[in-house]
Amino acid sequence: MALTQRLEFRQSQSLVMTPQLMQAIKLLQLSNLDLTTFVEEELERNPLLERANDEAPGGDAPAEAGQFSGSDGDDSGSQGDGQGDTDGFGGSGDAFEPGQEEWLSKDLGTRAEIEQTLDTGLDNVFSEEPAEAAARNAQDAAPTTYTEWGGGASGDEDYNLEAFVAAETTLGDHLAEQLSVAFTGAAQRMIGQYLIDLVDEAGYLPPDLGQAAERLGATHADVEGVLAVLQKFDPPGVCARNLSECLAIQLRELDRYDPAMQALIEHLDLLAKRDIAALRKLCGVDDEDIADMIGEIRRLNPKPGMKFGAARLQTMVPDVYVRPGPDGGWHVELNSDTLPRVLVNQTYYSELSKKKGKDGDKSYFTDALQNATWLVRALDQRARTILKVATEIVRQQDGFFTHGVAHLRPLNLKAVADAIQMHESTVSRVTANKYMATNRGTFELKYFFTASIASADGGEAHSAEAVRHHIKQLIDSEAPAAILSDDTIVERLRASGIDIARRTVAKYREAMRIPSSVQRRRDKQSALGNVLSTAMPDRSRNTEPA
Image (cartoon, rainbow, N blue to C red; front, side, top):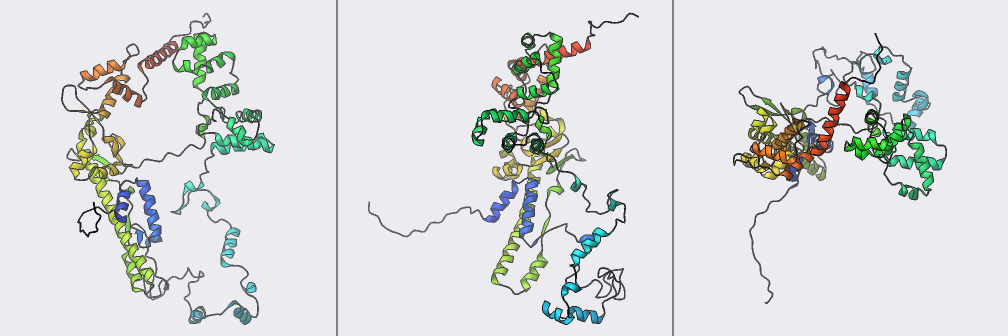
């Protein structure tokens, strides 16, 4: 086959992802917190963007540069006859005299010329800077109001009480403070600080500390000696390597770590299985003593480090509100507090366009105007899309809002996308990290999209979330003497018209962290025995004769 060269024309269509389109797609999947951060960065980067609710302090329009207040006649109702309040200039109510204006506008020359004119140095005339003098006077001045002494509430609108709240002490800081007191040697402090850095948020160390000795160049005995001291730190149970060691440390602090309790701590797996008979035999105690020992174990803290430096829980702010309407339907509205309000400052752009500058400056402000305009449109389109998708979800899941989780219908992204004439990927981005506040709680938008489970009688399919809710109701209502197995739950669900396999029931049960039927039987029988033993009077108690 001979190789030849030829010229051909081909016409094709392709979608080009412009930077503006990529930005709009990115904004669509951001949460309200991430969106606020993004808009704040754009406000700092783009000089033509401004907040819609920005106002000057006091609600008055800012005075233009180069003009004094009240210099052009009566600008406000409190000023008349061309004389304004000039208390802001030196605290005097007198206007500037012509001689003073000429002196202010006159060029005084360099520092050397000024000193030659005054026949002395400037340090003798201006002994300190105005800012330093004002700061010194403020420190010397005595408080004049009750709030300045630290009592009462401040009348300032910018007063923020949270600014005075002390920072939370982390677990590492708390242990480091005790480390500086417990050890005086540099080597021991280094080993202790290294071990403290390995402690997780629950207060536990890794099970194997052999690498720590190798990395520090210390012997295993030195590491164990420092660890023994660290395990005596507050809170009790910290720096343990497993749950048994954590509980044992706390029991030693309470002076309750006897041989019987040691045997119980070493067989926590039997306690988890509620095998009380085996524990009673291993510990060598009777039923009353084993019950007291288990009660002491339950009063201990298995995660002693959680009360120090725990991660702050962010309040979940809903993006959409759903309220009952007057006509029996549902009213869907956006949360205006989560929508950033930004405007394009066209006046500032027109002023900059009139000024003659470099070609690069003009192109920069033109690009800034385009980016600002596109951002405003993208934010508006994002709000409209979220409202459209949320409205369709409410329409599709009307039974859930009216009757509850049991009436949640199976729903997928394609059904919503076809109804609002959008692509599935757009609906997927809209429902990511968005929350809806309803009369039944606050849910993520993705919560309403569930898989479908076929009906046993060939009728309408059931939602997977509704089936999980049904399984939980069956297990919660079971009696201690008649625990439902997974096969029994399958039979009852099929009797209710839900065709489901046993492995699916087991998967849903494990996802809801519900133990097996054997474990539930032990738990409920143990709880029932504790209730009966508490209700029955102590027959061994000797009563005095009347």
